[in-house]
Structures are given as C-alpha cells and as structure tokens.
Length: 326
Ligand code: DP6
View 1 (cartoon, rainbow, N blue to C red):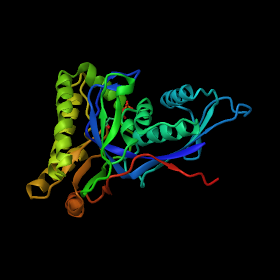
View 2 (view 1 turned 180 degrees about the vertical axis):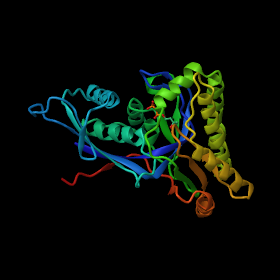
View 3 (view 1 turned 30 degrees about the horizontal axis):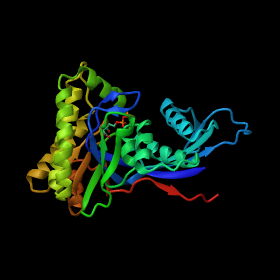
C-alpha cells in the first residue's frame, strides 16, 4: 500500500482540446502553476488474491462510490506495468478549504498515479508518473511537479509529459481563487473542449497562439515579471474562451458574476494595482498578482462583492508520499 498527496494547479497557458482521446494527447502544450492550498490525498492498497473482494473499490471521503472509467484506466495501466492482476482499494480525500471552488481532477489523478504506482511496487520517475496521471486527466500530468510546470504536447504516449520549469518559485506571485458559484460545472471540460475542437472556426488559431504563448510565458517567468505573466495568462484564457463562444452551438463558462469580477479587475488595474484574471471550465475566476498586493486587491473587490469567498494561494510542491501511520 502507499499514500500520496498532490496539489491542484492553475493553467496560465491552457490545455483545451485532445488530438487523441484514447492516448490523452493534447493539441497544444500548456503551462501551469501548482498551488499550495488545495490537495488530494490518496491511499492505494492492492488486495491479496485470497481476499473476498472481487472488484476494485473506491472510497471517497469515507464513502464507497462507483468507480469511474478514468480511474479504472489508470489502475489498469499500473497493473499492466507491474504485471499484477490483484484488485485495488482506493481511499481518497480532497482537502479544499470550505467550498473554495477549486476541487479538481488534476490533484486527484496525480495522487492516484503516484500512490498506485508505488503500491504496485513500481519505481517511476516524475516523467513516467506524469504520463500515467495524464491518462486519468490531462491537467493531472502537471500536478506531479511543483512550481511552474510545462506539459509538452508531444506526439505519442511517451513524449507527452510535464516537467518543472521552475520548481522553487523565488518571487512573490500568488493566485487568488474567487468563489462565485459552487455548483458543479454545466459543461464538463472534456465535453467542452471536444465541442471547441470539432466546431469552432477559431480552433486552429487557438492551437497556434497557445503554442507560441509557451515561449513568451517562459520568458516572463524567467524574468520574474508578475504583470507580464498575468497579462499573458489573461489573454490566453480569453482566447480559450473564444473557442467556446464560437463553437456550434455556442456555450460559455462565464457567469454574470465572473464578468463582473473581470470588470472590477480591469478597473483596479487602471488605478495602478497590477492584477489579472484567468478562468478554467467553470465560473470561478482566479486572479494573478504579487503577494504584497493581494490584500489590497481583495479589499477593492470586497467593496463591490463582499459576499464572495477569496482564497490566496502561493506556489505549491509536486507530488509527495505520506508515511503510513497504521
Ligand atoms: C480549462 O484536465 O479536466 O482547466 O483531460 O478531459 O480530464 P480532461 O480535462 P481536464 O481539462 C482542463 C482544462 C482547463 C485548462 C487546463 O487546466 O489546462
């Protein structure tokens, strides 16, 4: 048995579209920051052959749940690599401060890949773990590593993996998660991205722009230039969302309050406070700014939207193993 902890990440250059959904290969490379506030802890136990258990077991927050096809896919890959046929018990918990709206498949599949591989007796390096996590959820490939992380799109299973660009972030960048709505998303990211790929006339332009964005974002990170990182991330997020507005039929992840926050962020910026917005496949925006400005940004937003929850996240670590206590 083994237990692993993995943190969520926020993409600054987004992954939005698969060119191979069997192998989980993306159309473009993406770049993220692993966050230090929200994580998943997962314990995997391979059951002895003589055990009564005749199938895999999945226990979330202490409650048995049906096992999803994605979890089974990751488990099958682990069993194949380790030459095992035993069933597994997966016990998992999400550690997300009360309704922060950042629960994510990224931390879940990164923790599952790491714990599962070790429980099966495999010794995988970060690159191999990232490949394994990618088969559960694309963004999970990036939660294996800490700090700023790039997922190389690659061209086949082994060349599509994520690695740290800057594992120890030595400058004060933070991400403020704003909770505007805690309901589950209306259009799952995998469904939304498939719609964009198939029907948006802007899709090819998205792929080209995102791919070019990796280079400019990497340069901004190396220069420790927080306003430039923020500006590039905001532009990239809006380019991604343009492929949903231009899909047939069109759809959007923006809620009225999301748009309101964006308006306020732009107004704050005009007043000289550097702050930028990014948005994934849901209505809860994430704001990028310097740690020393976070309080002022939150105060400015609270003036108009006092009822919302704001959580300040710093850069987080890659996946780690937790020692067994029992
Ligand atoms: C908008 O990784 O959740 O958050 O690979 O289908 O599981 P699947 O999708 P997922 O998509 C993440 C999309 C995104 C952008 C990103 O994190 O890069």
